[in-house]
Amino acid sequence: MKTKRAGTRAVLQKLGQSADHSTLFHWMVEHHDSMVASANGGRIRWTDLCVTFTQLGLKTREGEPPDERNSRQTWYRVRKVVAEKRARTARAALTGLAPRSLMPSASPRARTPIETTRPSSSAAPTIGTPLAIPLPRTGSDAPTGAGGPISDEQVAAKKARMMRTLAERSGR
Image 1 (cartoon, one colour):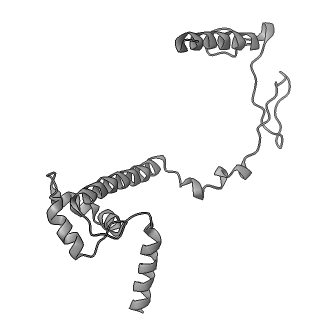
Image 2 (image 1 turned 90 degrees about the vertical axis):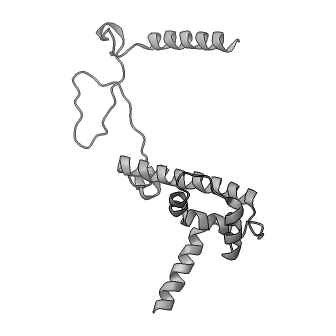
């Protein structure tokens, strides 16, 4: 029974390890926290570690024993990958949302268009009808002041001002 579990663990470990990276990279990712703690904020002596890496049978992507230069570069990439993974995990924990792959609503097929209409003053939405998003009113009944809806003419004027500013700043 133990051999089955060990075999399963080995298969799952191989699935988690990309062929794009060396055995040295995967070992460093697995032992990242221990390496950081052991370094204690000091410089790492790569020459001494390369001997140990070779004794452990760790190789570069090309199948060569690691040297000082590629060990240092691998450690740089490992720290970057581990930091990105932890940042993604922290963002997911803060938002409390499941990954997008687990969210069926994230699928393009699940999206339905929203109807936009100008609501009449007397019509109230009824159960079973799509909720209408009110569009800005125009004419004499349109409210004025900050925060209120604006007319199509006001939108066009604002767009024209923005385009002129953009053209001036870009030198066109």
